[in-house]
Image (cartoon, rainbow, N blue to C red):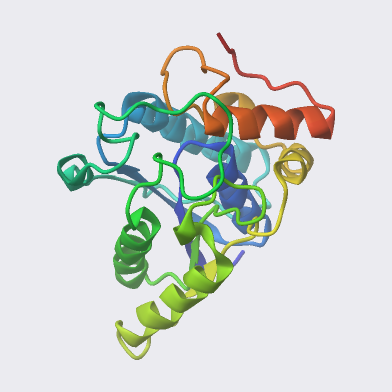
Length: 234
């Protein structure tokens, strides 16, 4: 057992969930953090986050030799993204595209979302005495979001350590950044990640639409991995 802690940013999706499971496999005590920013599927994502945290607790009980994910979790409301708009995820007047993945930055990009998430995670990490933050960004097989790039995350790590106490030394882990979605599915299988509890759809909260960018990436990843996606689609 160790006392090293990792603040894990968890959306309820399979990328951030796998990242948290990977951090636990490295012996970190997990401090799960979720952000409610008035996104279209906020209710479903929060439900998935809570269910995944429960699954982590259950698995820790079944495998007591592992490091507990801890009792503390954060679910933070940051509704200003709704007022900011400029994204199909937070502005209902902008349609979520369903015609296939396009070149460039899509309208589902939320301006500087990961920068804000990481800044808030850094505050929690400093408070909790954590030495790590994990984020499930994917650069090579993602939707083209600029705040998912390795270079950007590394620059945030430098800024966080410049802007915190001298004794604070935080490493940002992005274990999926160069993986394809099919590899993410395969790694999740190896670590017994409950993918049936995760959600990727940008549009729906009951059955996934199957046609938004996020659903297409997820479905293609499962197809290439030769594994059936356990969630329901329209």
